[in-house]
Amino acid sequence: MTAQPIKKTLPPQNEFMTDVINGLTSDQKTLPCKYFYDEAGSKIYDKICELEEYYPTRTEIAIVRKYVKEITAHFNPDSYLIEYGSGSSIKTRTLLDKLKDLDGYSPIDISGEHLKSISEDLHLRYPDLAIYPIEADYTQDFDLPEPLLVNNNRIVYYPGSSLGNFTQEEAIEILTEIRELAGPNGKLLIGIDLVKPIPILEAAYNDKEGVTAEFNLNLLTRINKELDGDFDLAKFKHRAIFNQDLQRIEMHLISLTDQVVNIGDHSISFKKSESIHTENSHKYSLNSFGYIAKKAGWENQCSWTDDQSWFSVQLLN
Image (tube, helix red, strand yellow):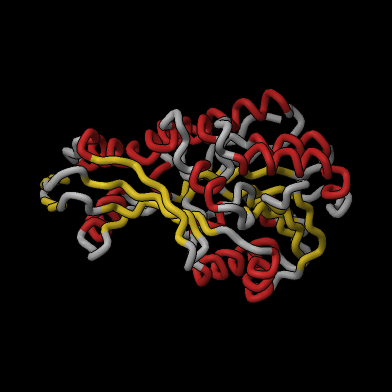
C-alpha cells in the first residue's frame, strides 16, 4: 500500500479569531479546547499521557490489551476503522495488531502536522493497511474518503474519554452524528472516564511536573503566534478543579494581575484572579453514560472496566 494524502476539512483561520474574541469577551471568559491541538500542543499532550498522575491513558490501554480478543470478536471481517481524535494512535495499535483484514483505517485529528507524522509511522508498521488520514474538527462536517463511503461495516473508535469535553447536550449530538456515520451495521467502541475520588481526579490535571500547565498555557502561545496576540504567559497560572455539581474537571487560566491583552485589533481587559475557562472533562457513571448513549440511538453491546472501576471501554451498536 502507498501512503494516502491527508484529506482536509478545517475551518478558516478567521474562525479561530472569531472563537477566541467571542470567548474572551463573554462574562465568563472561555477558549474552545479544540484549539489546544496545534503541533506543539499535541506533543505536550503526548507527554501528559505518560505522567504518573494521569491515569486515563494507561488504564484504557490496559483494558483494551486485556480484552482485545473479546472486543475484536464482535467486528466483521473487512470492516473499516475510523478513529475520532486519533492523536498518536497509541491505543489503536492494539486493535490494528489484531485486526488483520481491515478494509481501511481513517484517523481523524485537528492537528495536520501531527497527523501526517503519525500516519507515516503507522504506514511503516502496517504496510498492508490502507490508511486514509482526515485532518478535521470532528464536531463539524468533514469529507470522507471514497473507500469508507462504500464500506458497510464501519467501526468508529472514540478513545480517551474525549466525549467528556462536551456538555450532555453536545455529547448526545456528537454520538448521534457518529450513529449516522457508522450506518445501520456500524459499531462504536468508546472510552469513558468514570467518577472516582476527587483527589485522584484533581491530581491528574494538576501534575507536579507542570506538564498540564504547559499544555494549558500553550493555548495562549498559539494565539500569540497565529492571531498576533501579546499574552504574557508569566501573568497567568494554570488551575484545574473538580466541579461536584456538574461532575466534571474544569481547567482554567487565572490572571495574576489586572492587565490588558491585545489580539490583532482587539483589546481584552482582565481583572486580577479572573479566569479563562479552557476545558471541561466530564466524568460518568455507567448509568449516566448509558442514558446519553441511548438518547443518541445506541445500545450497549458489551463493556469492560479495570479492576478499580476507574475507566470503562464500551462497545455500542
